[in-house]
Amino acid sequence: MESTSRLYQCARCHHQVNICRKCDHGNIYCGLVCAVLARIKSLRLAGARYQATLNGKHHHAARQAQYRLRH
Image 1 (cartoon, rainbow, N blue to C red):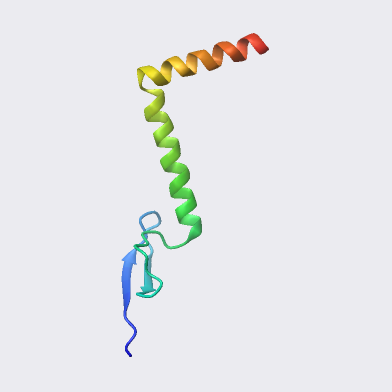
Image 2: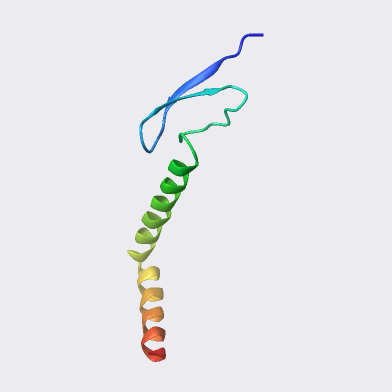
């Protein structure tokens, strides 16, 4: 039986990766390091988007007020 593979470019570092069809589960990153770094960036951006909303600003102000009371 002939083994087939898929060639793709990592969504983070843009290296070309060859993965066999058996191991392929819709991968978009070349490995765990790129996946973890992309996840960290995604969470940071999501937090920044939330902080820009009215709800996020109110929660941030409340947290800061509690912090100032403790210190």
